[in-house]
Length: 290
Image (cartoon, rainbow, N blue to C red):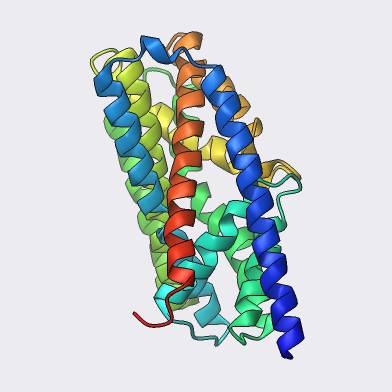
């Protein structure tokens, strides 16, 4: 790759990141204007801040997923560089069109002299296969409470554990170790996402209100994420994720106003977590040794 091409890719990636940050700031402003901040107790603010950090740390699972897909394509990259590239470009998912983050990652990866075709193939495996298929692990545990409202919590947990075990066995014994590793880290990410929703909703409604349904709605939240993820052109699943969780969670005992507030808070948490991840990755972009 010529120096001029590298400079062009560098500027293109920086421009995408800058535009994405503008969209992120606009969305944060809109979310903040929709919430009565004075009604929140200090403890809830602490929970929101803590969950933003948890979500930012959970994002570290996604570069591991991408790295596993790169390894499958025969491409090697240090983990810290994968984190830096992924986090720096991932903020582009907030740009309308929902493809800027992929284009940015492709450009940054080519700056590392990685083969373009292999990088593109790794993102196909990551987005179409591993993310969607692994998210499907939550589908059966999510459907059972919809049709059997009195199902015991233990059944939902057993179904979820069995589905996770089946998925990991599929990756380990029928595919290869790289896909297995990718599936494992994707599951960790989705569990952290479900945890974020469950804790947020519990903070609004009270933990003792319906603990069984808190778990069920957390599983529904991951399915809602998938709906937003596969919707073409929806930046970061904006709107679609919230609509899906409201549609699913209305089958539970939680009041609609609590669900709406949880949706807004979780979106704020995810955006703040993405910004923290971006900031850490931007710092790592400047580091040449670890």
